[in-house]
Image 1 (cartoon, rainbow, N blue to C red):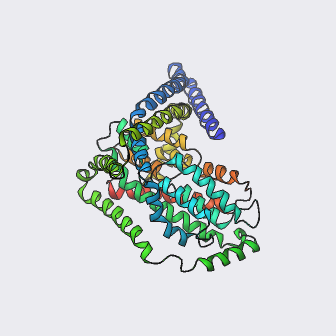
Image 2: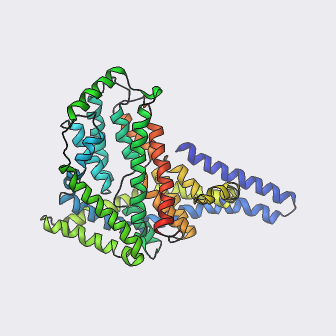
Image 3: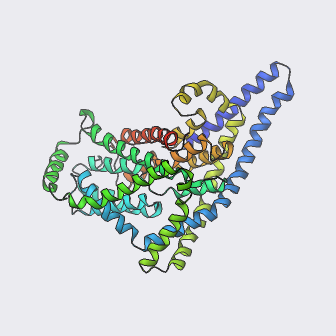
Length: 426
C-alpha cells in the first residue's frame, strides 16, 4: 500500500506539472497556476471529507454492529456453521472431517458470511495453525490452505452492512438495492476462487510435495461417505431462499428492496428475543464497537481520499478515462471505477475510500455508484489476507495462492457488472 499511496500522489503532481507547463507555454498563467492550486486544495478537501464521512458513518456502523452482536449472542454463528459444515467436508477432502482445522474453518467462513469480520480473523488464524499441523513440508502452503484462503479472498458475505450504511449516508433512495447484486457477485467470486484453487493445484509447477500428495489422498479416502445427501438439505433450502430473494427483488424492484432493511432489523431482533438474548444490552455493547470502528478508519480514509482527490483534480483521472474509457466502458466497466478494481486486492480501506469518493462524485444511485458499491461488498483484500494468514504460520512458499485469489477478485468484478446490469438495470 506504501507504493500505491505514493504512486497516486506522484502521478497527481506529475499530471499537474504537465498541465501547468502546457498552459504556461500558451501564455495563460492564470490557467497554469490553477492546476497546482486545485491539486493542493483537493488534498485539504479530501482530508476534511474523510473526517465528515467517518463521523456520518458512526450511527450506521453502530446500528448494524449492534444488530450483528444480537445475532452472534443468539447462536447465529453456530447455526451458520451447522449449515456449511457438510459442504466444507466435501470441499476439503484433504482435511479429516473431525480435525480441529475443520471446526475453525467452519466458524471463520460463518463469521465472514454474517459480516462479523472481527470475529472471523481469530477463527481464520486458528484454522491456518491447525492446517499447518497437517502440513508435511513446513513453510510450503498445502492445497487446503490455498483453497481456504481463496474462499476468504473471495469475500463471501451475506450482509454487506458497511456499504449499505455508506449508501444511506450519501442519501441513496434505496440503500439496500445492492443487497441482491452483492449476493450474486460474492457467490460467483467464491465459486471461481475455489475452482481456480483446485485447477491450479493440478498443474505441474504448482504440485505439492510427494509426501503431501500421499497424505492428502489417504485423508480423502477416509472422508469418503462421511457426509450424506440428507445433511445437505438444510443448506440447499437456505440457498434456495437466497435465490428466491434475489429473484423477488428483481421482479418486484424497489417495492421489494425497500423492505430489506426493516426486515433485517426485525428479523435479527426477533432471533435474539426467541433465543433469550437481552437484546437491548447486547445491542448497546455491539453499537459501542461500531463507534470505535468508525474512528479507527479515519486515518485510512484521509490518506486515500486526499490522494484520489489530488489525482482527479490534476487531470489524471480525465486522462485515464479518455485513454482506456472506451475499451472498459464497452464491457460495462467505466474507467472511473477501474482504480477501485485495481486497488481492491491491495487495500480494503483504500478501496472503501475510493468507493466513498465515487459515490460522492457520481451519486449512490447511478450506475457507477451501484457498481462500486457491489464491487466493494463482494470481494476481499487478497494480499492482506495472504500476508496475515500465511505469515501467522511462517509459510513463505505460497504456490498458487496469489493467482487463485486474483481469479476470485477478477470474477467478482465481472459478476458485479453483470449483476448491476441485470438486477438494477444499469
